Image (cartoon, rainbow over the protein chains, first blue to last red):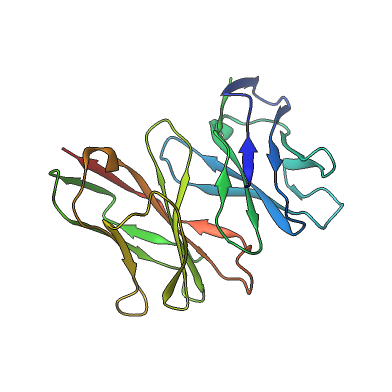
Length: 114
Length: 115
């Protein structure tokens, strides 16, 4: 069975600094995808970044990048130049190509302090 | 930019009543999902829907739940006889790709409160 674990319930960072959120996963599949979603206080789920497991290159989206360590089954999110608007709950999620259902971690609440 | 919409944004109902939550997917998307999030907890998969039938459902998705695409555009989740523990945020998500693993785009959610 697929599992996703986020071991940091809460984190904080000063504005303009860098923060890394951790995520580990477990799957027996070879073909899977990993995501980070952001959930601000409005509770909307917003896609931050996506990584295909078959790609060795780490995905980047502007200030957001991942460190994908396939052998260690680790998928961390790095936020550079943190902004107040980054304050939100962040969820790591995985999906395999044969099911389509997203499996979410427990979430990490990130607070960016001015 | 196209987006998934959901109505209503907030639904309050009495225990035992039926509710229908509605979702309008992004127009060229083929895969449809419902998830729920009980306050303070993680997001849980309920059901996936493709080609007018359920592809997969979770243990949560018991006989009181049903989904359908009545008019080819809206995608609905019906809860036949609501329970207090059904109080949660319900998210619709849709995906465009040729595989089930394509990115899923979420709607803003419907907050369901069962009294």
